[in-house]
Image 1 (cartoon, rainbow, N blue to C red):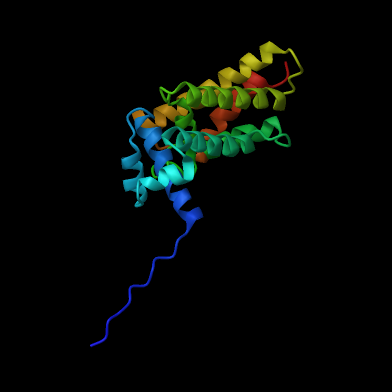
Image 2 (cartoon, one colour):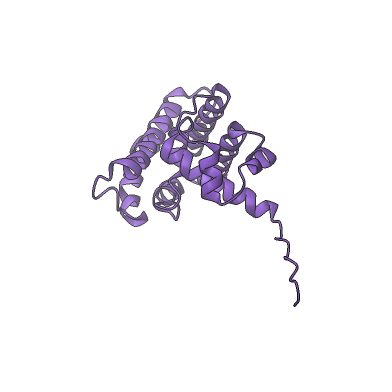
Length: 196
């Protein structure tokens, strides 16, 4: 009779961290910060709840990491080298991309108030930065508040689309694909931000 020695599980810190981020994004976007527990996130990720503190220090730290990931991804939407003509394509991809269903839109995550002042400050800063980048892509110069206002309105429309797609299931908006969204988004961005 031979005894088998259990093989220790290989640890994958980066993989575990990503599992937690993915689960947290889904939970925070769907339920909001206050209604989401760290235990729910850990259970969905299939890991021990103590790993949230190991990798993110706290629930707030995990929320901040989710928002930071959102700003990185959204920042690529209106990066310095993105032209105004490319912005509707990028927003349509964001609204209809692979995150739909399995991964709720990062735009929806940015709508969720955390109830924590520091996390909400981060969220507001991300939204402000995104609108400023959009205005810059449209040719904004320092102190041009009219173009910044128009960029904020375009951002508000994109956030509204994300919200309606994720919660209201209004058809045909809820099932519209990237190509379906592209033309109306081009009209919106062009109407608000094209040179006047």
